[in-house]
Length: 465
View 1 (cartoon, rainbow, N blue to C red):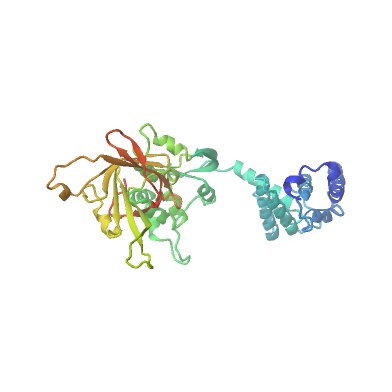
View 2 (view 1 turned 90 degrees about the vertical axis):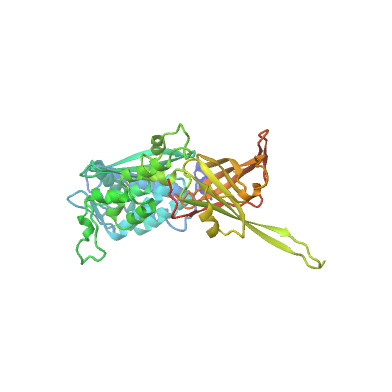
């Protein structure tokens, strides 16, 4: 029986075994409450472990046992200092208010926590399986779980003011999600902001961080002698790829790399027209990402200007043959290149396989003149790239002996900006490609059968912004 149908069973359709278990458990709960009211020490109830084992027995694989487990968990909550006699669980409390669990119980609590997560997300089958696994590891795992949750909340309530975790909800591209934001302020009043999964990692870092040696027997490395202010100034002149590589060295490096001033520089350089609309504010963009400049730079769409987008296209063309029994087929290969500039100018080149990328890329400048070379304008709206007024620039020798005539057509493209993986913004997919008549402005769609996606290739000698 599926989990969806087990919750709506009529009382007369309820399995007899489940009904017996529920009545038995109610009787046990009444006995426990009576003992607690009289002030007597709670003793293990005969048959309780047997009932719990029946509730989580692998033989009861159907989801109808889920209500029985829920009753077991809700009824078994008790005082934080309660210990069930004769059970394998050992729960002691240290003077500083934290609990110590045996390794087996700690593992059971972790499994139980996963089960609660799946239950909250309506994944009842997986939750039931994990509940059973947790109770097999320890029959009192539910009690230990609730004690640990209470102590976690108590520790969060007295969390130092220098670490403030603020839950927030953001909506990006129509998708609403909850994130966690961690604001860390050190003794020198520098602000480090992180959100999402990174915030969960950082909140467990110690207060005083140093660069530690690779070999513990060695002393602290000399880099610890450099003031943090100087290290931050060095990081601000590096590119973001180098900064992220430095951040992977140690926890101290990761915290330094999150300084808001570093990523604010990247955001302010990148997100300005035509990367964003004229009336759009950088402040509003950053607020979408919990005021985390690093996340904004990674996750908000932006065209890469430090390289070229290249599409390698193929198609088959039938050839002619003198022999009627022989069919000749040609594989035609050509490349499309797109280079974007900060001032809104874009270069487009269509070249056959005689012109390889290693030859074309050094030539891809506004001064280039060859067949298939176009210059136009670009703008970015959300994750959609609009390229307009693509005008072909003919070779200079083509009009050496004839009067220069303006082009009768120009072209326009609409492309979708993608990121594979996150933060790269390295792919452009064709949405539309039109030929526009200069005289009447009529746009005629061109076939996209042979067109392929553009992939970004970085050029070290080209500046980004």
